[in-house]
Amino acid sequence: MSPGHLTHVPDQRFDEFLLAAGALTPERPAVVEYAEGTVRTTTFRELQDSAARYAAELDRYGLDIGDRVMIVSDMSAQAVALLLACAARGLPFVPVSPEAPPERRATIAELAEPALCLTAASCDATAAPGATPVGQGSFGPEGIRVPHPPVPGARRRRALAPTDTAYIIFTSGTTGRPKGVVMSHRAVVSFYRGMLAERIVGADDRVASTSPLQFDFSLLDLGLALGSGAALVPVPRPLLRWPTRFLKVLRATGATQVNGVPSIWRQVLRHVPEQLAELPDLRGVLFCGEEFPTSELRHLQRLRPRMRLVNCYGATESMAASFADVPRPLPEETRRLPIGQGHTGAELLLVGEDGTVIEEAGTVGEMYLRSPALFSGYWADPGASAAALVPDPVEPRSGQRVFRTGDLACRGDDGELYFCGRNDSQVQIRGNRVELNEVQRRLLEFPGVTEAAALVVESPGQEPELAAFVVFDEEARPADESDVVAFCLRSMPAYMAPSLMRVTDALPVNQHGKTDHRKLVASLASA
Ligand SMILES: Nc1ncnc2c1ncn2[C@@H]1O[C@H](COS(=O)(=O)NC(=O)C[C@H](N)c2ccccc2)[C@@H](O)[C@H]1O
Image (cartoon, protein in one colour):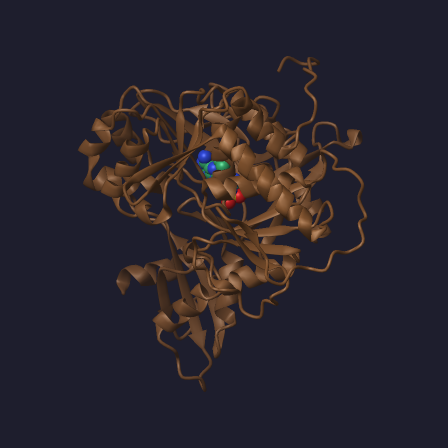
C-alpha cells in the first residue's frame, strides 16, 4: 500500500468476508471433504444455507453479543458453517480440537466461561471432567442439540461492532495456564485482506488444510480458500500420519495447494517421494509455524520444481505477519529462509535492546509488528496484554500499539528479514507453540517431584524433541518415567508432552545457579 493511500473498504464481519467471494459463484465448491474413499462437496450456496440454519437455531438460546461458544470439532463443512453462524450473531467462537485431553478442555472452559459448548456429533470426545450439563450440546447435519440450554441473561448489547471479538484461541502460556488470544472481526478480516493481496491462490484452487481447528493455521486456510472463492479441503487428521493415505486424499480431492507445518512433509519425503512427484494437481505449498529444514525443502523442490513455496511467518496474536516466496531453486549456500517484511498493510520492525529501530543489515534485533490485524489482548490478562502490545518504538507519542513478537531476526543485504530464534523459553514442536515453563509447572505437580526441567533437544535432520528431567523427594518412591509422561498427557496436548523423560537424582546447575541445560542434554547422549 503506497504511503498515505488508504482504499476505503467497509468493515465486514468474519462470516461476511468469507462468504462474499463465493456468493458470486454459489454453485462452486466451498468445502471438499474426503471420508473413507468418498469425496463430498459442499457448494457456497449450501454452506451459506447451513450457516443461516445454525444461526437461526442459536437464536433459540437468547445469547448476547460477546457470549462465547466453545466448539469441539475437526475442520469440516459443518464446523465451518457453525463458525460462520457464531460470527453472524457476534458470538466469539473458541475452537478446541477433539484431540485435546478432557482436562485441557475443562481448563479452557473454566477460563472462557462459554455459554454453549458444542461438540461435533461425528466426534466422540468425552465430556470434560466436572463439566456442568448446562450449555453442553452437539451440532451436525441435523442441527444443534442442547439438552440443558443456558438460561438467557440480560441483554447488554445492541449491535455488533468491527472491534468485537470473532474468536479466542487458547495457546500455551508461560504461567502454566493457557493464554487466550482474542481476535476481533476487524483484525481477522484485515489479515485476510493482506493475505489475499499476495495472490497465493485463485478461484480454481483447492486448498488442503492440515491443521487442527484450534490452531489458527486452520483459520488462515479457511480465509485463503473461501476468501479467494476457492474450495477448502480439510485433510482428516488421522490420515496425516500415513504418507500414502495423505497423498491419496490430495489426489482424490484434486488439491492444488497444501498448507501446513513443515513436519507434515517429513514422512512423505522419506517414504514416498516418487508419489509426491507424480501428484497431478499440486502447484503450491505454504508452510508456517517453524523453520523448514533447508535439506528437506530442497528435496521438495527437486520433486516438484515448478511448485510455488511460500514461507509464512507469524504468531497467533495477528494470525500471521508475513509471506515470502522461497527462492526457486534454493541456492546451495542458503542457510536461512527469508520471512518477508510484513504482508500488505503490515510492517515488521527490528528493535534493539535499547528500544531503537535497527535498519542496518546483519544486526539481530527483536521483531515488532505494526498491523491492523493485531489481537485485542489476552483474555482476562491485562498485564500480559500490556507487555505484548507496546508503544510504537518509532513514534511513542502517537499512542499506536505494536506487537512485541519475542522473535529475533536480522536484515539481509537484500533488505529481507531472516528469522534468528526466540528471546525467551517459547519453542515450536511440530509447528505448535510450547512454553517450556508450562511443561515445567506440570512436571512439578507430579506427586513427589521436587525439581523439574523441560527443554528442547535439536539434532540435525530430526524433529525438535521435548526433553524433561524430574527429581523425586528422597522419601518418595520415584515413579516410572512413563507415568510422568502420562500425567502430562492428561492435561496438555500431545505435542506438549515430553518425548524424552528422565528421572534423575539432581539437576546440574551452572555457575549462576541456573539449571545447566547443556549438561542435561549431554546426559541424554551418554544414556
Ligand atoms: N515461518 C516461520 N519461521 C520460523 N518461525 C516461525 C514461523 N512461523 C511461526 N514461527 C514461530 O512460531 C511462533 C508463533 O507460534 S504460534 O503463535 O503458535 N503460531 C503459529 O505457529 C502459527 C501462526 N499463528 C500462523 C498461523 C497461520 C499461518 C502462519 C502462522 C512465532 O513467534 C515464531 O517463533
